[in-house]
Length: 271
Length: 340
Image: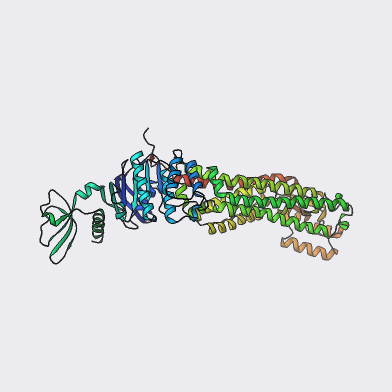
């Protein structure tokens, strides 16, 4: 899946502008950003449910999509939803679907209107996975799930990536959920891409520095800094080796990285 | 996808089927009991015309009650169109959008157009068949009793609108209209209300403004003041207006003020409308004869065909328009097929 200069408007509001990125097969890309950043818009564009107003979006192969609302036909039982999936998708894997439904503990004869929010989210994920898609788009898939279901869901997605090489694009506004899940990060804020790259490179390429106030950070790019009375806290993007004592430097986690970039973007917009 | 659409709409379809069944039973029952009464009282010569020998004197209150039964069933048949539009057509897509399930349906592998077509077909085909069956049985019942149950002219809305072709057209239009309104409004209850008002409005507008002019009406001359002779000659006709013809043979409605004045003054001078003096008086004022503006009874099936075509075409256009919009809106040209 590849986007170049992608933009979308709702009437006069711009939901997305000039987004360019790529999602490669066999990996999980995390789409992060605050509420209203344009994550759902981007996923709907990719699912073919919205039309881009500018730019190009190419999606290769079968696309599975779970919308944020986790829509299911209320009057259908779990088994009937699986039947819907089987009839509407030529690549449907029925054994796999039944297996996942059983593992998630979803009663097959219960109407979906009577399932809990977490159960509906699980069933929606199963319906998308069992299509054996080439690209899987998940909008806040974990939000309503309890911790056990969440762990199951993450494991199923990872297994699917390993077994079928599906490209997963998964959105969340809780970055902590995604630690250890995604191998690529795409951070959106107010419709623009703020950060895009492999998680490993991003983490390796940044350092969190806690040093005396007058420390010279040299050529390194300061993404965000907070100066106290005697101490300076800064997230920097490395440009070459960082010549500071080890006890002043730590590796940032994903959460810190994303927040720093989103804050910088907002400061730039405000200025 | 037919299974999916059927599973989704089966409750509404079965309820509609029940409604059809009740009406069918009612009509069969009415027909049997009414024919039994006709047999018992020897009214069979009054079936083709109430003006047959002595009929007007022999018929009694039983028959006046029949008019009401027929009228109620007619309303129930028009109501069938309302039910189809409001409970099947309008929610067909409005509910999908209201509950966001369109996001699920439109993102499956199956093309949006197939999903759309399956849903429309599952609703429209049984509904239209129901209309044909209801219309046919209504006709089978009312023709057996002729003028005993429908004393009016054959084109009267009560006899015209529940016929199979017209009813078929109304129902197809109800589905098409409901689909379009549902896609525009996207909320079930408002979509139902809009469909109801728009459908009834369309039916009324056609009945009032379009139907009388499907074909150019004929001017049939008759003696001044004689209103029965034309009706007795063609009891199935539709009289749009009555009046006179002027010296050149042009029709002038009796609502025309000049004609009203002439009629009034001649009535006063000749003491009524049924005398030679009245005729001479009107002729002296420049009128050639009394006249009716009519659609003759033998145009009945032509009018049925026009009515059915009009509504069916409107319904089909609605569906095609909705399909075109859906394909344009949810086109999947951003997708490149996976390399083989």
